[in-house]
Amino acid sequence: MHSYLLWATPTLVVALAIAFLKWNASRAALLGLALTVPIAFFSGPIPFSIDKLGESLMRGAWIGGTIAPYILGGLLFWRVAPSKHALGGAEAPSAGLDPHARRRRLFFACFLVGPFAESATGFGVGMVGTVMMLRHLALAPRHLMVFALLSQTFIPWGAMSSGTLLGAAYLRVSPTDLALYSAVPVATLMLLWLTLFWVTLHQGKEHMSLRECARELLWVAASLVSLVACTYLLGPETALLAAFSLLIILRYLVDERPNGQQVRQRAIACLPYGLIIGWLAATRLLPSLRECLSTLLWFRPFPDLPTLLPLMHSGLWFLVAALLTAASRKRTHTLKAEVAASWSTGKQAVRTVLLFAMMAEMLNKSGIAQGLANGLFAAWGRDAVMLTPALAGALGIIANTGNAGNSLLLPPLSTLASQAGISLLATGAVVHVSGLALGFFSPVRMSIAARLSHGASEERSVYLFLLPFALTAFAVMTCFAWLSTWHS
Image 1 (spheres, one colour):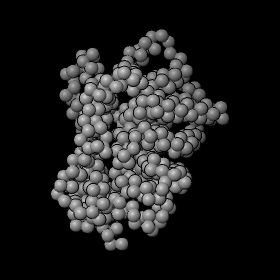
Image 2 (cartoon, one colour):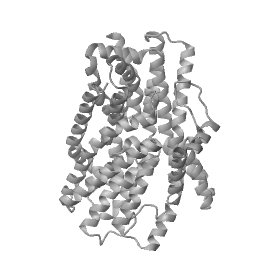
Image 3 (cartoon, rainbow, N blue to C red):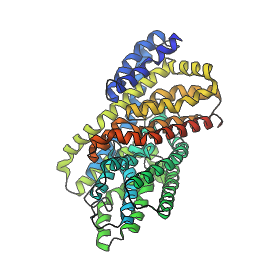
Image 4 (cartoon, rainbow, N blue to C red):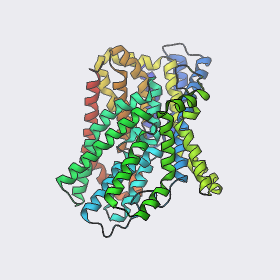
């Protein structure tokens, strides 16, 4: 028992430092890494040496290094590409909107534009996009806060699926497979988020009708089907961008009924998005191009870790697209400031990914991850998997990121799944979605929504309003954990 508590100390300290000391995730991860070193050396089940320490750090740096371009590339492109006409209807006057049009704009912002922006960049930018579209509708701050948070509902595909890619690296599985398995709990949770949307509309005295509810349900179903298809064909990094770009165009044409000049303005403004998404789709769907780019340049320093294919790396292509867009718009003089701003926004995430990856590799190499899994399996058997949604969800809420849960829980889960004879992908998807989706209720995310919506005094009331939905989300993910124990 003493050994298990000691082995769990770094994870517990990370959670406590974020929850009670209000440290950011990267600072807490650094502390966790520092604590893991002596514990691995002096109490790990497997002898740990300086060589293994160096290897763990290098392996963690490699995992983090392959993820970082997704974060920074998406951020830079998002800063360079938009124009005032980029978001369909974002700046359209709202004073004369009828109740039907108001409601359709609310849905459009929450479930299409917001997730699209979050997929391109992460970091709550989806909330910014949603609030931009809704700020002229004279909504109560507490309602606008909820609508802003609803932009986070497709979060496993957020920040170009960097969290999904990281989770797949820890599980040693294909990112596409993990994303497809994650789509099932995400689709189930979408029913909960739609219910939250409808309840908020009702409280705000917005237009309500069964016909509109059915229409919105069909749009969400179409979004999920398109997302799964694009994930299967393109991989998770650009799946949501590809799927939702077409849905956004279709929804804009149906709802706004623009004239020819407005269509041309939107098309020119959105051209950079269309070109980069089209190019990335071609690199996945055209066999000869895919083979050429995959074999021309590659790096694989560790046989069991992801291979870096620079010419197939979506994050690197987003960096190239940002440079070309700046050049075509004669804005290269602003690039230095845009790069600095992108790094300022993304550096904490990059550091967090690197530090947690190093910590996870150290826990693996020292046998601590396997030892914790052995202890859980000995005490709980297959039922130990039932604990994972609560642990991952709590870490997601505390840290405002799924990376903490993925880094600290997925390595021991791999051993546990093997011992219990259950599906690694099914249980991994439960942990992954729990950590990311339940971050919806993070205090950090709530504070961002409050700041954007001018609702600083409303945070407590919004939390009380969201509490039943949070408890239901935990229950849903626990049910999926139970089902995963029978998916062998």
